[in-house]
Amino acid sequence: MFDHLSTSLQRLFKSLRGYGKLTERNIQDALREVRLALLEADVHYQVVKDFTARVREQCLGAEVLDSITPGQQVIKRIHDELVRLLGGERRDFDLRDFPAGILLFGLHGSGKTTTAAKLAAMWKRAGRRPLLAACDLRRPAAVEQLGVLARGVGVDFAAPPADATVPAAAAKALERARTERYDTIIYDTGGRFQIDDELIAELKETAAAVRPRNRVLVLDAAIGQESVHVAQTFHEALDMTGLILTKLDGDARGGAALSVVSVTGRPILLAGVGEKTDDLVPFHPDRMASRILGMGDVVSLVERAEQTLDREAAEQASRKLAEDRWTLEDLLDQLRQVRKMGPMDRLLDMLPGAGPGGTALRPPPGTDPSVQLQRTEAVILSMTPMERRHPERIDGRRRARIARGSGTTVADVNDLLRQFEQMKRMMKQLRRRQKGLRRRG
Image 1: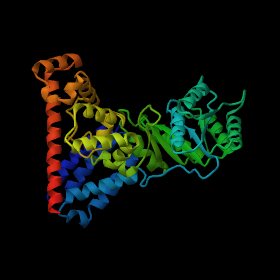
Image 2: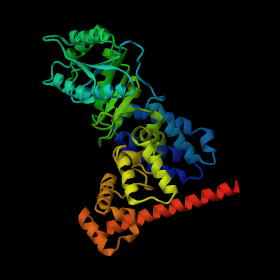
Image 3: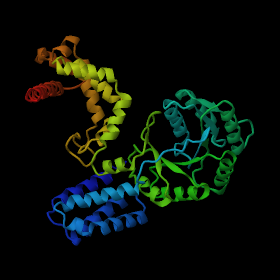
Image 4: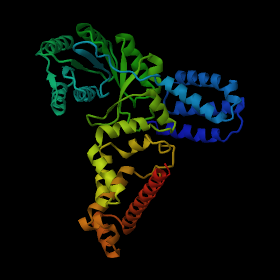
């Protein structure tokens, strides 16, 4: 989503780091590049103007100009302002009521129904008992779609009574939630391709009928400048409490995320980063700013690993490495564990220096890391169990057979075997150093 913006800013930062001394002219030139990068990312022009004015004011202070690392100081100011632009601190839903009410609204196609199911799945994993309420009575098959999604994530679903209005359907669902002791109710409302008076009136009546503490706009991150108008209009009508950005994994320029918080003063609560039920992640302004600037997001990477990886399998692999019993079968198991964490592009974005503007760990342009992972897996699967356990026995004839079986080349097989040996050598060196340190201690 932020690839273009990230690449532009990181290119600028490389030149800033090279300055031993900054002048007002240097800063003006740098901020001009920042302004162009933000505008090209579809950030609202007024937001860009305010952002660069604040950064300029801070950068012209003596603390920056007289610093021994002025370039780094400018980057820090831009990072801090970017965090502020994205909302400052991480904010969450208010779940104090019983049942806690979440009214979802937005334009047609923004992903409200899918988001409702993802929210229900998220809270079910957290130990809550959610109820999905179908309040989209206009779109054909919307009620049936929500019912299918509810069954898919294993939560209950409240269908609307026959001939009910939207406010009446929501009120009936709330009555059921109270009677049957659900602690969370999520209202999936209808949308339009454009905001109109009928939609706003319907949503106001629904909010008045069920009084949800959380009134959340589901916003497609790919709609660009239009997102500001959409967010402002819904906010003025419903006093929304937060936003969920969907399709943040797309290839749009991402200006919505950098504009709507500043314009509405309401936080982004969650971000949709895929189609799976667990592809709804907390939105951390500081982590997102770091990723945009190429500083990575190791905390989120560790959190995702803890949620998805098999701890016992990881400990067993660690023991094998320590005892020099690591084989290609173990490597295959680890690759499959990594794939559970999500697309490789998304994981690389979380590593410092490996984002869109980085070169340290990212494959060459045009190379899909996920495809590379699949190719490696295919090569290992084309080996016999003996070859996986004893790769040193794989001669030229075997390499040719493995390449044919995996649909790759002999060079690909050679690369994998060479990389595997390098990994083992590195682990041996690390073990020797650790032993040496223990002896000295």
